[in-house]
Length: 297
Ligand code: UTP
Image (tube, rainbow, N blue to C red; front, side, top):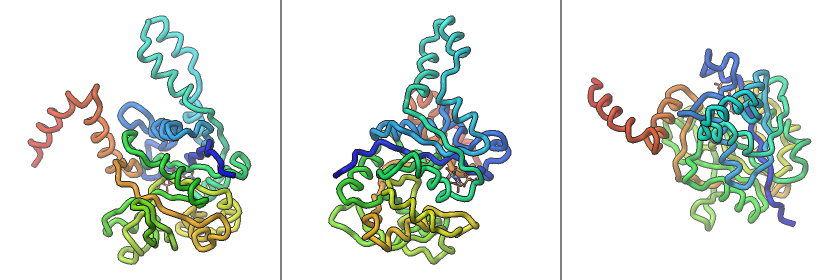
């Protein structure tokens, strides 16, 4: 029987060391990208793909995340009194987006360990994993295509991006075989952050996964890998090598717009790119930006 996917898991328990001190008391997923925290873009993307049950894996700074998706009576009352319906709508929007659930990771022992914390909530269904470090432009389709392929092939699906070989060592990288579908490849191997110059291809994993529940048993038996962390990539490598258990792993090659918010430079670029495209900010930002760039040495 084919399952209809309803569950999204969003790991947000990392330490966010690249953004210290901003992330000392706040998860990096709460950093604003223009005027919305990164996490809200990700929840909106899940909801747009039909995933209304969202489980967030949180860490010690979970309060800001929970509060963002909860009511704020005092703020709502003040905006209502002022008649500021526009801002009131913005405040209420994130509250009503999805059915939110939270579980703590305890020690941040890696992305694989964070995903394993979703086992009880997810049960025996396929589910999506979305990372706040990658923002996918809402005008481009990715997650919906991944869900389709998971249902069609009965396999786990990861999102792949063709990257410059010079930066492949910063990602999980896939060994692939072509399929009859132009945007789908079969994954025969995966390696997390290969040493520079040793990547098996230019196909890098970006932070979207649609996984079969068999991944949980594999994660339970996955030893710490790169950086001493339990790596999701290592569990997927095991799944890829055992197609009889979980249907194997396929990659959906994404050719749309993706914004990286994982490190400071890419985060700044993402904000500029998104703001330039916004109707409310773009018309004023564009001419200023051109002049500013024109004056740069
Ligand atoms: P990163 O590798 O970007 O780590 O995690 P990080 O700790 O968040 O950031 P830096 O490198 O120290 O700046 C990728 C994703 O996995 C989650 C993070 O929250 C992020 O969404 N994660 C990572 C966990 O939830 N738990 C972990 O133990 C590790």
